[in-house]
Image (cartoon, rainbow, N blue to C red):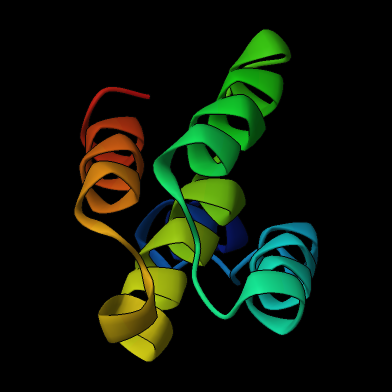
Length: 84
């Protein structure tokens, strides 16, 4: 049986809603997530240290909305996921 610490360490983090709300707002306004806005948002996240939940949110955004994310934004988001 696993203790709660082990479960927390191995459990997949729940995607941060703030990440999803930001991207969905951008998609409603312009139809795409552009690199500049992705860079500004990721910079803001990094100012306090990117959490596992925020990285999970970025992964979910790419999975759900990948075709509506421009190439520059894809690069920014992927780099944030890997180099948090």
